[in-house]
Image 1: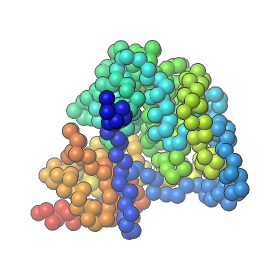
Image 2 (image 1 turned 120 degrees about the vertical axis):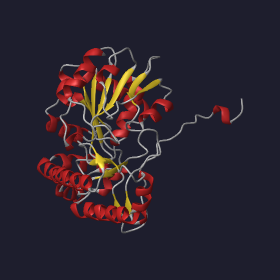
Image 3 (image 1 turned 60 degrees about the vertical axis):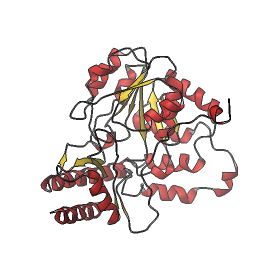
Length: 353
């Protein structure tokens, strides 16, 4: 056996492009267009740089305490990590440990199959229906676990909580992860179900609705037994995952729920106005429950629009993948950014005539 045969090889996740040039309108990575709460700036000024020589609190106690207060949970029901990607990776490593395949949709967050390949977890991708919606009955069978992004990405479609409960009831012997990165933009969280279903893990993030993608904070909420299992894996992998500034600043973010709700309301309003304008331009799109729109034009290829927008320094997301290659995913920015986006589309449509 040669050197190459002893190396683990995977096809990595490809994140949205982070442009280096200035003057770009960035609508390709679902970041929040508004800054975090003013309380974050105040907390930054109180940070004591001399303490950075010390390790951070491995339990992130201050942050966990604020999360427990925010959601009305016990601290034993919360696990935090470096973004929801870190939390989800720990969930895959912890809960998916059988010979049975885990299940997740064929069109969803594209990190799921990467983790499954990395950790050598058998998996099956279940096709969404013709309207890009999850059919709960497809998940009511023997499996090694289930992962559902809700609202789904990149489609923005929402699976109602009663449908999630059907899946939980049908799979009492495996863990069901509901990835709620976008839940604050128009959906009902499955979180209340954790008191009734010991196999449910709800994962959320600070990156979207809380305007804090740069802090890298994600968290899982579940029965204390599942949280203990997660923590055991974390402490076997890396004890100090959360840095000191993120713990302090993340706690500050949670103390200003009114500011967060105000920003969410602005994004939802802009999303609906943008959706209406796109429909007038001939685009086809379903209602979105996330901070992005999933759109296609019946005559113009998505790749052509993607490249035309990029030439105008407007970045959106396009995947050359089966079933979705005719679609663009467009993050909702500020009103002025979305007007610039719409103006660029009008120019591209006019030039095409």
